[in-house]
Image (cartoon, rainbow, N blue to C red):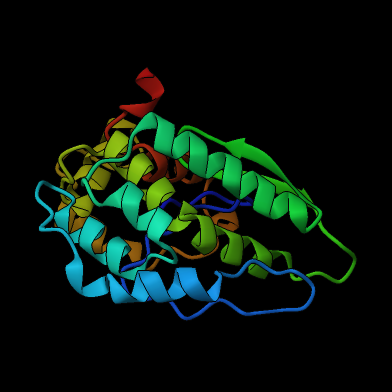
Length: 211
């Protein structure tokens, strides 16, 4: 489930095999040859994942940048310790490029500041995200916290919007599916609707705000 959060970076679970990271002399994140080779050679040995997020774990495992990331994914769970280790590595990776990481919000969103003049910060963030597994370990950790049973996105989003009073009773999954493609720039929405949509997209079941 995507998480729409204006002006912040968000995790995005990789569902297809990612392209190789750019090897740049400036020190952009990259996997070592041995690590990349090991990760590729183990691709055919993916675990038989089970549970509500089995498909997501399988896709993330196939797209992982390193053996270390796959080790965190292979049991079909993301522990607090694994998430904390990934967070430290993500912060360090960005810091090496002069970018300050502001820490994760409960919904997985985050902000960064800094970066060398002229640096492509978005690309650096994306590369660090994939290298350390923020795009898989981080995304899955947050997704499972907010929607443990992997319930249908349209259904829970519709219910959340109704609960927040921006859609009428009876508004359902089909309505949401039809409407979502028409929602564009959040600045064109009413403040109440934009706030409700952001809150529902971040925490549709209200589980994160209970923590």
